[in-house]
Amino acid sequence: MKIQREHSAQINKAHPKPTTAKRRKASAAKSKKSGKKDTVELSSSADEVRRLTELAKLSPDVRTEKVDAIKKKIKAGTYNVPADSVARSIADFHRKLKRDDR
Image 1 (cartoon, rainbow, N blue to C red):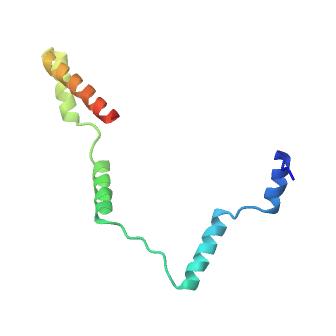
Image 2: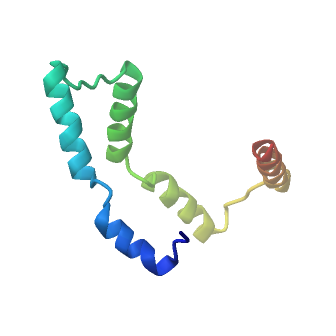
């Protein structure tokens, strides 16, 4: 017998897949019967990641005092960045991109 696309909907209605909730319920029932309980343990590195994430959320996104100092220098016309420093930073950035592509 060849199953056509239009027949697949009828087949799915007759034999539906169990939903996620039903699978969880069945799994919980199985665990109850065996006397085992599900447990979760976080490693110390997971605790460290959580702590650092919270610390990062508390820190400001912008160091306003540094930005204000640079703005003042730009307005006064005294802000100067050596060209070789800019060129070196651009070259380093491109080298890093190439390493990351590997």
